[in-house]
Length: 225
Ligand code: ATM
Image (tube, rainbow, N blue to C red; front, side):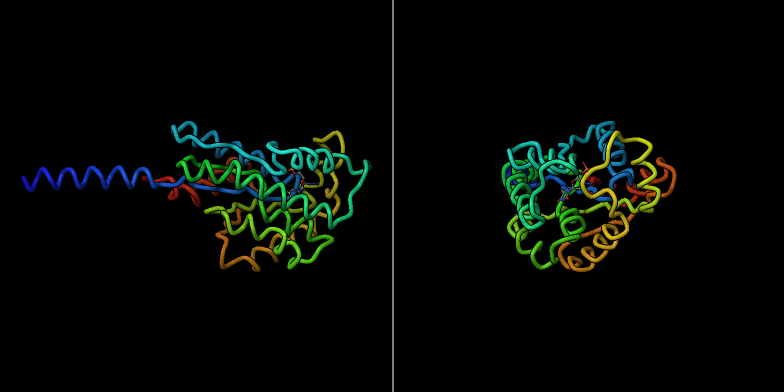
C-alpha cells in the first residue's frame, strides 16, 4: 500500500517536473560578415540531427509590422531614413513584441529557441548614436521578460568581416562601415550586462568547422538531459 502511494507520488512529481521544464534560449551575435548566421545554421542543424527540436528566430523579427519595416530600413542605407532615436526605439518595440508573442511562449512550452541577433545588437549598433542608458531604458521591458540562457558572440576581425561583405553581398547595409566601433560596443555592453547575461565569446577568425566545434563545446551541457 505504502509502495503504491509512493509510486503515485513519484509519477505526479515526474509529470510536474517534465511539464515545468522550460526551453533553452540561445542568442547569436556578431558583426555582419562575422559568420554569425552560418554558425547559427550549423548549430541548429546539429541539434536537429540529434532530434533536439529548436525554433529558429531572427531580429529584426518577421512577426510584426515594425520588424518587417526595420528589415527594409537596414537593407537600404540610401533609402528614407529615421532619426537614430526613433530607430533605436523601434528595435526595442520589435524586440518586446517578439519576446512576448513568440519567443517566451515557446520557451514556456518547453521548446528551445535560437535567435539570430538580440538585445546586444541594439547596444552595439544603436550605441553608435545613442547612450547605453537610453538603450537599456527602452529595452528593459524585453530584458525583464526574458534573457537568453547563453549569448554566443562570434568575434571576427572587423576587416575580415568587411572583406566578406564586399565579396559576397550585392550591397552594403546601414551600419556595415562601422565595424571597429560596433565590436567595441559589443564588448562594453557585455561588461555592462555581466550580472544578467551569460556570454560566450568564440574566435570567429578560425575555420568554419572549428568555430562550430568551439560553440558546441560551450553550449552542449545545456542540452544534456
Ligand atoms: P543581419 O545582417 O544579421 O540580418 O542584421 C540586420 C541589421 O540589423 C544589422 N545591420 N547592419 N548593417 C544590424 C541591425 N540591427 C540593429 O541595428 N539593431 C538591432 O537591435 C538588431 C536586432 C539589428
